[in-house]
Length: 383
Image (cartoon, helix red, strand yellow):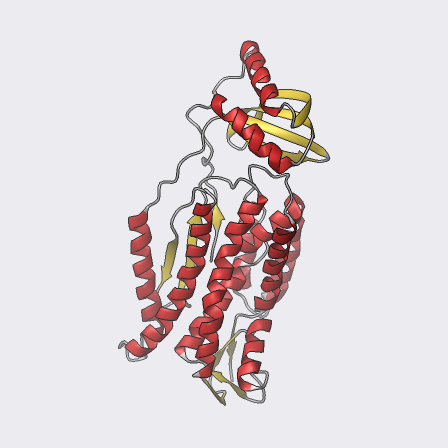
């Protein structure tokens, strides 16, 4: 599962003032900020010692913008930078607000050795999970047939996030893969930590979209090939077995390959290791596209709808609670949504809306979330 988290101290600065701003300093800061916003923002009021993120002594300017906010953000930030200010654009109720705080954003400290160790451990984990036989020997063909395509999909997903974030000058960690041998699928995906907020919604969306799109570029062909070397067989009779979940996309690919919707009439696809890896790739992407919190789908929803998307978390919790009667694993996700689903990655400029092509990209991600969603990812069928 892909989470993008911002540590609580992500914006703390050694330069941050620890005492209330005195009158003399207020006068100097007022003149500096008036110069910074001149021609781009008309100030109606100024308040000092206003918290913004972890800065306790920010300056709040309320008023109205005189032109496009994306142009204003670049210009105001450039003017304010020599005096050590970070600039934040916010909309509070119907009011347009600029926050200014003196400090610096932390630089990324990538832990490449840890990332490499976790990647190798995850490769071994997924290999053992699928390659371990009932008599506790290793079937290399099965293990490699599952591990290689699955790790290709997951690595493409994470590197999509990483390289687009770096291109957009976002301080992020390398991907930290999470091994989970024997249990479940052999991995819980990976985590990339955002150490600083993105500049605007467009850059947040680009980073969020890059992962699932890059993963699907590999997952769909891998699944298609895997289905081509799979076969239709009879489901077991008189014994328990597991059925993988169907999504609209997965069901459609099976229909294109075999000319029927499956499972049906006691028949289903007997998945090759490659096909199962492709299916897992779709499942991981679907979970990442849930439109909540700092998941990829949460980024898409937030950049499109802004802070008001938080109410949708209640809808998601209700839906997953209902689905948990079919698949109890959703209860874990309900817990995650309750704990983390309200927190979004808020950009520095949280006013400038998406342009047309980026709105289309956000809508595409939400459409993919619907096409990939599996109401019951795994079902145990008992005789």
